[in-house]
Length: 278
Image (cartoon, rainbow, N blue to C red; front, side, top):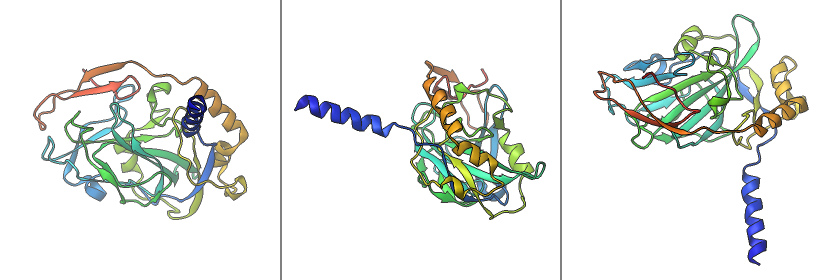
């Protein structure tokens, strides 16, 4: 009986970690992007540590009061989208939310996809698979259990396969946008509110959410990228990437002292997390 119980339990655990097949969900095209704090223009907040290719891959937002003065302050979705990750990732990340956005690129006039990541949250107010609108509350600014002074770490990813394992991908503009520059350049967008499909379950190394899906015939004809992600070829590609899964050693890295927060903070993180300036 004990042996049977053991194998049943093992099967249940394995089932929970089988990634969902690539699919798609319907979302509204973004009508523009706003800043995720002090909406819509980041009033009362500043970036104390910005984006740097091959270094810090996002913007760290802090309240003007510095330190923990902004603890639990609201964090908002920067645009319409679908929550594709909402969980406590622990390690150097803590509570994280990833929202997938579709928008009409003003240069190419084609639908593009990005992921916005909100990290170190004190609390999360959205669930995986949930539709959100621009300016909707997704969580609150946190400290990741006291690991840092309170701040929001924001990333904007071009590559929607990254998920929470950044070490597997190039740490440059091929995979990331400078968040502030991207938002500033895309405050107003055409075709906002139009319904399109976005790829889901695309993370190459993470457990994907078993969220809403659409059959392949549901895709708008112009949504070629979503169609590609839902194809069997994409499924084989993701399976191959997952087979190369790996993690790095745990390290402790100092963050540069910030005069407004009044002290040096230390970050405990795995090698796939943020690389800081010494």
